Amino acid sequence: SEVFAVDCGWSDAELATIPCAYATAETMLHRAQVGSEHHVLVAGASGGVGSAVVQLAKARGARVTALTSKGKMQQLLDLGAHRTVDRNEDLVSALGEFSVDVVIDNVGGAGFSAMLKVLKRGGRLATSGAIAGPIVDLDMRDLYLKDISLIGSTAWDEMVFPRLVQLIEAGTIKPLLDRTYPLDQIVVAQEEFLLKRHFGNFVLIPPSA
Image 1 (cartoon, rainbow, N blue to C red):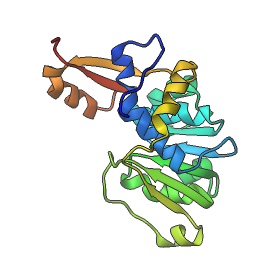
Image 2 (cartoon, rainbow, N blue to C red):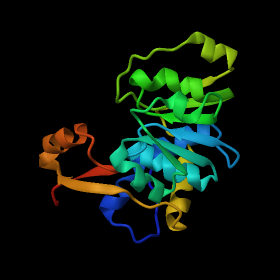
Image 3 (tube, helix red, strand yellow):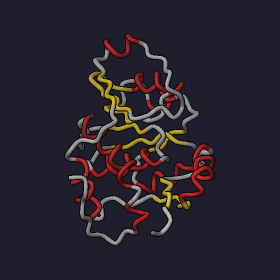
Image 4 (cartoon, rainbow, N blue to C red):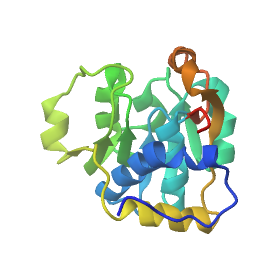
């Protein structure tokens, strides 16, 4: 039940980008019930999970706004985002209140409260991480007066991997492999990861048997 055949021309390293980042992304989109009628805001859009969300939300027909640094905006537009917003910009001023149906977030931190502000009434925020900090400000009035649903996401739903295999084999999504490291350079990889200069995923390559 945990093994999936994939008929594609991707390398092993490219396939290794899928289980963590893309499965996490697809589960959040599934739980938030994202469809073609929705405007989705993606926080941390240039990272492994965020860039997967951009592709997978577009595959569902959604309109995607990517929150990222200035230097990565064009890459996200090329990937399929309809719009980008500088993560240092005032989000409410940039998008307006009540402008987004769904927020997909694995960032947290100081920007969390603004993401609730831009959600429409009945909007949904799904989160799978807190790379900018686990403690956030939450105005309860935004939560209950706007009927917002907060969705935590860790384990993957059963339908996720079969759907990802279908999207890979159809050529709908592509791997975003920023670089690889030998397994014995995991410390170097982690240090580089924390600099946040990458676009997509890192893959660790184990030694040959």
